[in-house]
Length: 121
Image (tube, rainbow, N blue to C red; front, side, top):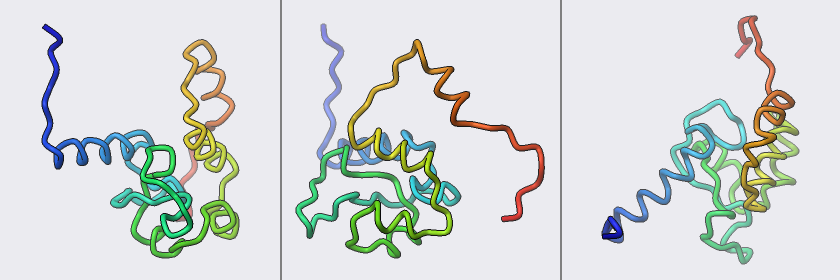
């Protein structure tokens, strides 16, 4: 009648983590270069952070180990790969903002630029 699916605790946790990684295109939310193979607590658990979706972002192992138990913003702003647009995306994630499809195209146009030259990385 309702077509509900039952998930084991492990399957639900795996799905939860995959959904977070998918939200950032499978890339690290910080460096946007490497594949996200961990999740990072924006506000570390040792400083009162939760396991809520809004406090977790996908992260590569290098960024996760570098950040350690620091708060995300001061750490992120010191990194060579710091990007104001990525910071804005993470802040929207924290606020649980949803995309308004009416202004979706305008938002994308304001944030992206096609680069036709080879990267130096």
